Image (cartoon, rainbow, N blue to C red; front, side, top):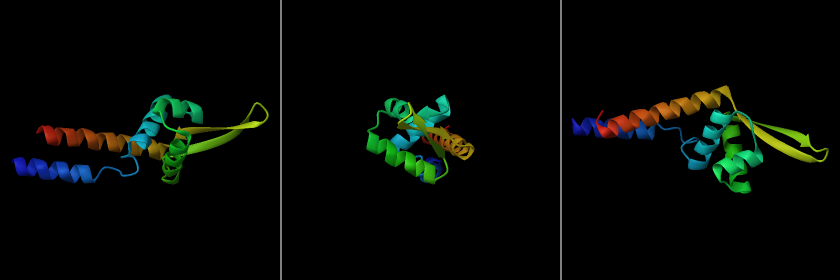
Length: 110
């Protein structure tokens, strides 16, 4: 039985979405899934990411269709970028969390 549990856990682990399975990208999706639309600076503060790190990871999530960025003018001069999770991104996050839950159960033998 232990071999079956281990094989199932390994299989589940290998199925985790590689786009989401990176701590900053998971943090971005979690923040957007919880708070809705957030500005670049709000997202940066919540995820404790650097400007470059947040920019790189948000671009990967946007390329995957998981987040959408919106640019606008703030104060007449400065542009402001905000982000929101897409319906596909929300579904991918829920699927990812379901897989993690299943993985935990398999590893713990439940």
